[in-house]
Structure formats: C-alpha cells, structure tokens
Amino acid sequence: MNTVFRAVADPTRRAILDCLANKEESVLKLAASFDITLPAVSQHLRVLQDAHLVTRRRDGRKIFYRLNPEPLSQVALWIHPYERFWRKRLHALGEHLRRKHGEHRP
Picture 1 (cartoon, rainbow, N blue to C red):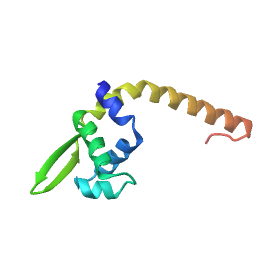
Picture 2 (picture 1 turned 120 degrees about the horizontal axis):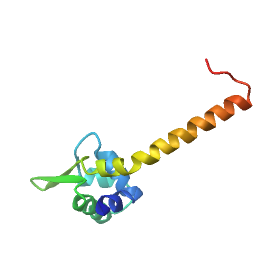
Picture 3 (picture 1 turned 90 degrees about the horizontal axis):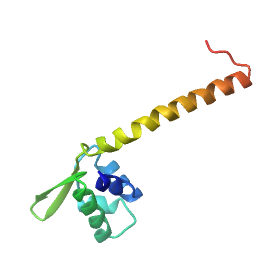
C-alpha cells in the first residue's frame, strides 16, 4: 500500500495517471505532454509500474502504457472517512452562511 501512496504523492505521476485515464499512450506521446525529459518521464512510469498503477505493452519499437486503476482503491478506502468528515464540515459551513445571510432553505 505504501508503494501506491508514494507513487501518487508526486504531482507529475498524478498527471501521467490523468493522461492515461481514458486511453493507452506511448511513452513519446506522454513525454510530449510534460516539460521534462524523456528519461524523467520513463522514471516516473517505472515508479507507477512498480506500484502496479500502469501496465506496459510493447508494439515493435514503441512502448505503450495503460492505467490499472485497481490499486487506487486502496487510496479511496483510506480517504473515505476523511471525505465524510469534510462533507459534514462543508454542509455545516453552508448552513452557517445561509443563516448569516438570512437565506432560508427551500
């Protein structure tokens, strides 16, 4: 589980996961999306692969990566109690602001 959390802790790796959310991409296409070197993108992909967050496929000389969302369920399970906490807090804030401004709920 720590491997997954370490992998998603980096903003560049999260952005790579976002790029892969809907489709498979080649390393070169991914690298073109970022202002870092190809070796740096490859290094980030290796961390994601070690965390089982991406899978790779070779087609001739090209390497393609695809998102494997299953390990992210560990993150979702950990965040879930905090999500309920923040939902309650935001609801209370909304109620407070409505009362302060004299608004009534329909």
